[in-house]
View 1 (cartoon, helix red, strand yellow):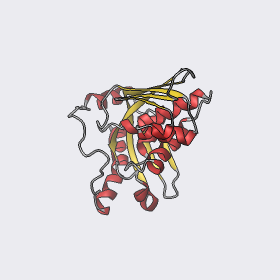
View 2 (cartoon, rainbow, N blue to C red):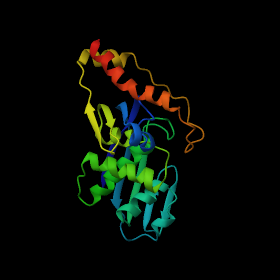
View 3 (cartoon, helix red, strand yellow):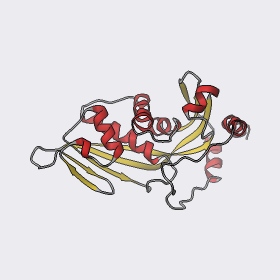
View 4 (tube, rainbow, N blue to C red):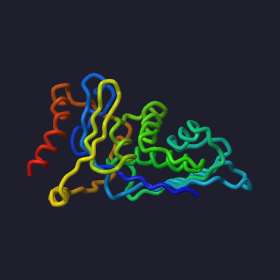
Length: 227
């Protein structure tokens, strides 16, 4: 059995500029951090003694003979993408779904990590992020950007920069311990219940507002560095 643990993320500044429709024209910048709440995925080869071929345990329990019959869209797409059958997958999270902390991307990263592990592959975080992005954006057509998969796969506190050609950098933010403590002491995160209208992205800000949002990560870093 393989068990993966993937951190959820807190997006601080720049959200929205990580969508390809924006950064392919203007570039993008996000300041984000992994947090100490996680998504857990376990995967194992299912012994061939059951009437079902695949078992998936999440808020439901699915017992299916064909992977095309799997109800969970990300699990179905991941198994099809990696051409896998005959597995048992369990998902548990420290926080509920649709909480706004990148749970879907954390699950995608953790699921792919665990499934690669079944084949004895230790996949690089950058590849996990790319595969999770492909899974969510191209296969599932989810309205998500690119920062969530990166910060969930790479972890840490990072300034993520997106270039117009699709390349990116995820530079670690290095601060003195005392400055980190001051920042953490001034952050509060509240759970207000699951987000309604999941999967529906409202109209984004206009170009002028989006340009302002894109500049905020660097401004935040200057404030942190300047004390």
